Amino acid sequence: MTDATTPLLIKRYASRRLYNTETSDYVTLEDISGFISEGRDVKIIDLKSGDDLTRQYLLQIVAERESKGESVLPVAVLTDLVRSYTSQASSVVPQFLAMSFDMLRDSQSKVVDNITKVNPIAQMPGMEAFRSQQEAFFKAMTGGQWTPPSAEKVEDPKVEATESREDLDAIKTQLADLQEKLSKLSK
Image (cartoon, rainbow, N blue to C red; front, side, top):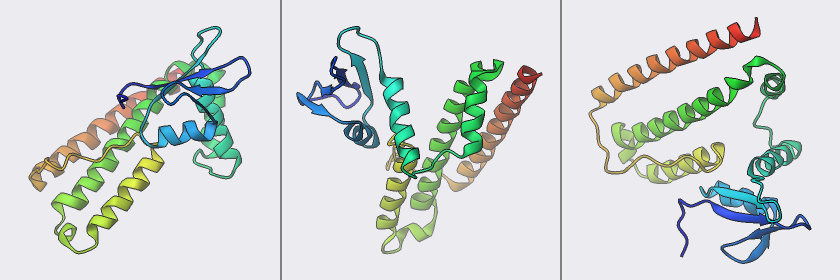
């Protein structure tokens, strides 16, 4: 039995074939993409050198999806990423992207949470199916990293609104700080 919190170890052989160490079979990039979409982390290493190749293969998966027309990244974002490699902003960009995706996951959790717990419409017939569809959508948008909010969590809507406003203010402050840092680096 495997532990879903432990990354799935994939070994790359000299022949460039990828080997799943848990199931003892060869896998493709599409298989690895599926593991990630299901919420599983992966670690890909070169069998001979021991080098971690995970980043390289994840970028390859993204590039293949983008080339097949599954465009998630706008051209402006891709352009800015390329620029960040050639500028002093490269030290800020990874942190900014990580924070952005964290904020996206948090806001998606709050939207689903509000739909299912705070809103009286949540008790209507068919809302459970709608909630399931929303969760599947959010998982697809975040590459399987989104997890639904705990069903045990029931909060007062007034407290939730106050916390949401405080969260939004904190996010705005962080974003302004990052923009200021980026503008200083580009000068």
